Amino acid sequence: MVIPLLQSITGLLAGIALIVLLTARYKVHAFFALLMASLLVGLVLRLPVAEIITITKNGFGHIVGSLGLLIILGTTLGLLLEHTGSTAVLAGFVLKKIGAGRSPLAMNITGYLVGLPIFCDSGYIVLSGLNKALAKRSGVSMVIMASSLASGLYAIHCLMPPHPGVTAATGTIHADMGKVMLYGLLVAIPAALCGYVWAVYAGNKLPAPVIREEEEITPGQQLPSVLLSVLPIAVPILLIALHSFMALETVNDNFLVRLIATLGIPEVALSVGIALALLGKRNWDRAGLGKILQDGAEKAAGILVIIGGGGAFGAILAKADIGSHLAQSTAIASLGLFLPFLVTTVLKTAQGSSTVAIITAASIIQPLLPALGLDSDTGRIICVLAMGAGSMMISHTNDAYFWVISKFSGLEIKDMLRVYSIGTIFMGLISVFFVYILSMMIN
Image (cartoon, rainbow, N blue to C red; front, side, top):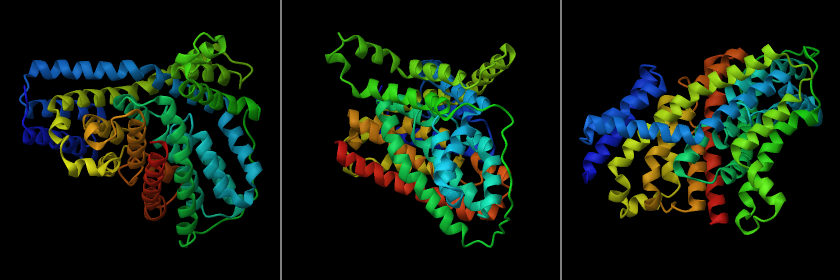
């Protein structure tokens, strides 16, 4: 059954509009918004209801089956690092090396490092006490400190797996997970630093009072060493990177290479990270550990249903076969990586969630990869990173992370909009610029 182009585009636009309307205006959970959008698109395409349900179920099951373990293990690792105090140790180490006089930069770097395994909102909550205490000791405005920390966490959250949005997009686009991770790490560096530079520039222009106060930060538990704190983050990244970049198929008779091939599987690597994170606390009690593992599974469940909804929506969109209609369009092809960036930007700005924006965008862009000239191994990596850049902008009052920063830092909304929200625009633009430079280097 060949679906006319106008009907395909109408279904696509109707689905996107419904997602934005339900999530942004009526605060409907993203899963139900994606599910209802899938039904609407199917009806616009004049598919039988039974077929719509079958396609939706298959799309949901496929994406959850491929990414479920990764999301659950990544969430659990983050909770373990929070519980053992490893995040606080990493923050203290960076502060010691950078110095209190450069405290905004120190917190920006801390956010980047701590954000590797931890979602930006929970990472900010964990580090907010340290951030406020450092602001008092150094006399730096809280809006500068808050935006600097938030930018470091946010950059890595939008650009690097195993964070849920970019992870789901990597699966949908069928990009190499290890290379997306490594290139995402690199692109996130200028993005985070851009947020820091803007925070200092814009924050200094505000008449925000500063309070100098000497305050000792005393941890309420025995903390692990710096080595034990960094290993659960560094080792999984290293294993996945080695797995991705080594030519395993040509030397698979080597025991060490076969071992790396196994350990570098993302799910196995994150399991290794969890085992290393357990070393950060000496006396584990059965009930406490069980509670963390339960929380990890429960928190991951909420993410997985959104990802599954995105998979269902993508499966329905695939039936529209828009890619075959537009493959000959020079206007579409000329946009290249900027189309994924723009689509994700519009979705993020409209409905607030970076995760929903990049998951939805991936479903839209996937059939257009050949027309965009991105239907290659490197092209798919570039596409995912471009969508990650788009998922940064613009964070404002419809973004839950915006309110986490405001609430835990005691900042007024107008100051947040002038410093943090505008900062996310520059972060997105600088990210897509570096993605474009990267595309010229690796193609």
